[in-house]
Length: 125
Image (cartoon, helix red, strand yellow):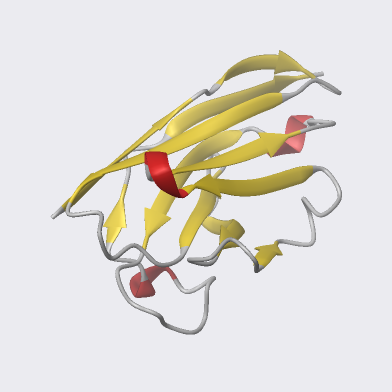
């Protein structure tokens, strides 16, 4: 089993920055893609960003390209989401998801094996 814990959420003003962390623990010897999803009030959860096992391939939702950066530290089994130029519409609960196999469709939620409980990000106007 792998445990996933997000941290770093909070309340910021529009234009501000936040850095989210996703720490994986337990049987972490076989971690592949690590990803971030978000769910805004009244909306379905949606893909934000993903990074592959080596860290050499990163993908982003169009809405965050140029503003968010995903990275990972293999030694710490941790992924990060640096969020810049935050907008009120970025307000959501942000979830980290991890896969223990190499699969396609990084935006496909059922392809992820482990999920955290989420961290709230609130952007005020």
